[in-house]
Image 1 (cartoon, rainbow, N blue to C red):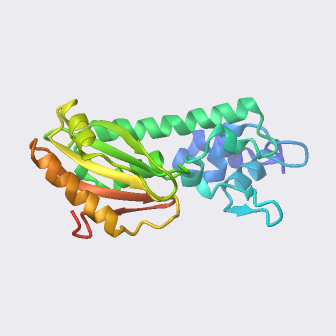
Image 2: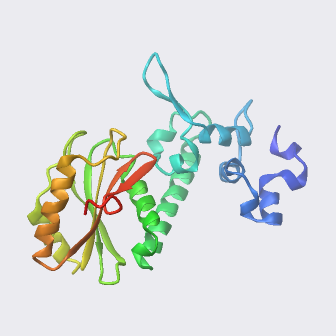
Image 3: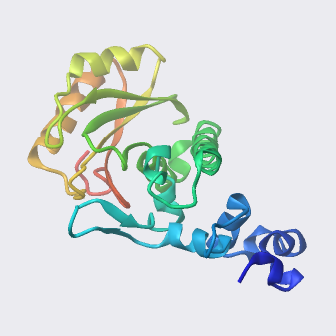
Length: 237
């Protein structure tokens, strides 16, 4: 049913203004952003399809379906959105801009408060930054003495299976923003967040190297699409 045919109090924009954004479902909020559908498909239906679980074409191996909810959309790029019929350049640009604003808002919140007041927020932020990458990346969160975020840097990039990490470079980068502590992070594109023996050995090597310049390693977070694991919570840091 077209939006104009819905009762006034059921149309997403009017519903938001009357009852607040919390009263709207994810698809309704997304429909406000998309504004219009396409021939034969209303904007609410288009929004709902974007939120459906992802799938794969068995013949071509190409992705089909949606992006797995709002969290999945946060991991998409303009190129990912091109496969959705009805999303022209303008709509794709608007969606990507809003998603990037969400990432930056979360980063700002982390910078403005003690990071470890909410370890779950750190995991979420690292998921936004690393989970969608097809290659393995080793990143470091540099923190001040109150554990506020100074910077997040991708220091090393590897293949799908391994990354070469140089302790000397990590130490030098920690000295640049005068960090007092760090959170190490890397992604597992394979989808598993279980730490390997190599992950454990690397954590201890970096912990020893950074201790020489009085920088503490607070955690090592492993990220995969939809999940993240804290090695500190497992007693491995």
